[in-house]
Length: 367
Image (spheres, one colour):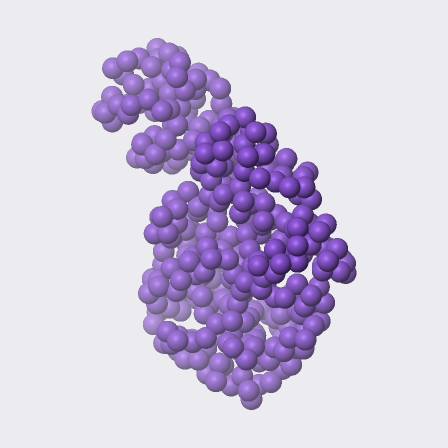
């Protein structure tokens, strides 16, 4: 399921006043990509015309030799350049396209319990259905329908956590029938909605806790495969992490039954990669699985970047979504999100702490 955090991250990434590209090469790449998320971070002047533009200007690209970059319109005009009448670089801040999508997302939030169609949303946006869908997907990376269903599923989650019945939850979130909700579960909701409402009641998860170079390591598994890998400073900490989502599940520590899993992790810490057929039992969206498969393909001892993974998936603008997929990984190390770093090699965030991420990378590099 596309969760609230993912969509909010993507909107923030598109609208936040961020620092611009660090080098002129990066700025030129932004110009070639007509990257409107960089509008407001810099402008570029064209010597042959005496005009300056913002990165997303739709005009034909000049030769790089004719281009000079400025921090903003003021600096460009002080150097004798005049504003482009086509892209209007003085109209900075959030792009009109991003503001439009943000406004429609707010409209969706207010009308989730009503019938929302592409036709009705495009009328609200003042665009044709085709143009609206293309605009929405370009900004958020998902279609309006996917966004609506993600928000409704998240609303169902909130209702179920409050103890409401499945029927009340699904109609309160805007689903027209029980069948529409069950089409989205268990793969997207995580488990059967009725089971989810009861905090995993009826599920059986066996686990063991072992020592490791990064602290205490909890391995949890269903009858199908590993479903949780939690890292912490104590047994209490990792057990609390496991219970966070499955507070009513049958959680049973069983060191003997989990011995084979513990042995695989011991081999990993001795420098051996996990077997390719090691079973994993976690629920995720199709996009998250695509990200995780790419992460599993990163060779032992090597790293990749969030942007490289996004580009490999054919979604170069989905860097935030890739980062969110990493944050949603419930089986640390097994799906090695610690091998994903920032563009400049910085470690960025890691659910179990950046120091542990560094330790894992150092361990793999040493072996």
